[in-house]
Length: 118
Image 1 (cartoon, rainbow, N blue to C red):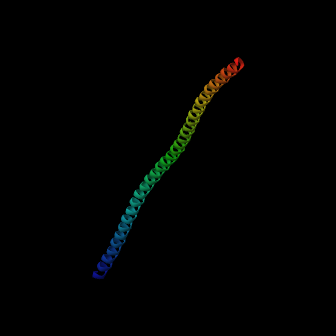
Image 2 (cartoon, one colour; image 1 turned 135 degrees about the vertical axis):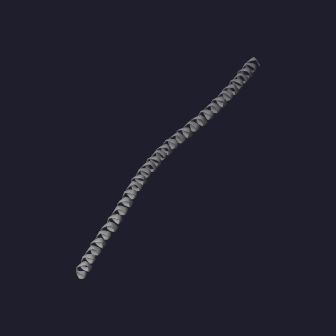
Image 3 (cartoon, rainbow, N blue to C red; image 1 turned 120 degrees about the vertical axis):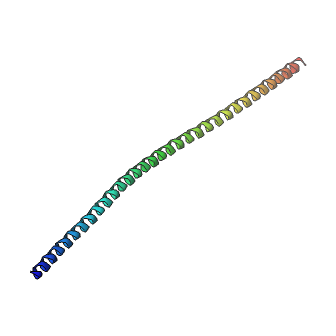
């Protein structure tokens, strides 16, 4: 009788131990699943953040292209303004030269009329 009780108790102890192993394994599996879910959420957040940064970089690159174009246009405008100033300066010089030419022509005509009178 005592031997049967011992065997029965050993069997119950073995079953309890097996149950304990199953519970421990279940807890480890649940912890691993929780960790995996947490890591998956973090990965999604990282991917979303990376996509946002990528979009921001693309927008910054596009803005840089636009600013470069604006700078080139401004430089062309500045070059054009410089050319217009030079053209006006040349026009003023031509006016001065034309005025001088008229004065000399008048002087030549005056000289010719005086020489004819002699």
